[in-house]
Length: 389
Image (cartoon, rainbow, N blue to C red; front, side, top):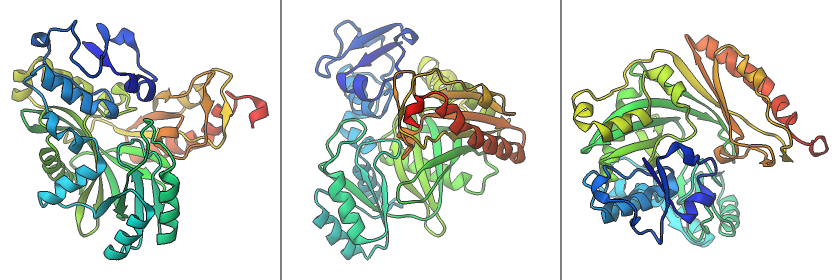
């Protein structure tokens, strides 16, 4: 397995990249196919992060790799505006939206649509970066003007932002692996966050076919994957289920579910998305004969997103022993390290880490969740300079 890195992906999306996990690491020269790699030996090019989606498709196209998603439709899987436009053109349920490059354009659209509340977001960012919920036109215009002066988490200037109607409903995530345009479900999650002006992440919980939304989500998700040109590889798709309109796409990510412990997923479902992706590439005939289709859970699982209420410099190794001692906690994954900055959590991208919990029933999950919230502040504060508190 070879990792191909661009300058953008190194600086913005792979801070936790571990070269030792790969047989070789190559640097891309202007997005061209690496001279040291024989395309005849490559079975598939898979994006390791959102910023790698377009590059992965382009490389696979240059190498004429048979198992590839079309490079000419890459933006449908990367740009949130074009995701929605593609669904609209194919008469698949979607949210009302507009791409705007000025607050005046936003205000005009708001008036035309008679919308009461909107969600503003960058078109090509991730992890709830810079997402704002606005319940008045004046607030939305002010927020849009502020966003136009910023960059998203990848360093892209927000010269055009996406405005969508605010959808009230439960949030879900669907993890799939596709082969020859057939989409196999490897995990499904309910997503929970505050619905404040700046949504804060709380947790995601595993589901199975017993959930009343399971089949409508899976069926809708497969239509979305088809419409956006996903034929091969992993995808992580997010939805909101409206009480009367049903599932509506939030976004698709043509890569594996990020910040997810593979052991955690395997404990719940008996497999994980990375394993099934590898199986679809290495032994496609076997994958076709015995595809995974998640319908039951071995255990219930919850990934709890940690929150920080302070801005500080981390000077001590984070001691997570008190979190690991909580019944049901399988592992803790911190995204901040000694010498780095701890920032107040305002989005999923600024969450300092994740705690993975498994349990036999919902009561045990809730008890573990409460204890995690009781412990997290102390764990983080012990790792920073006292003068920063």
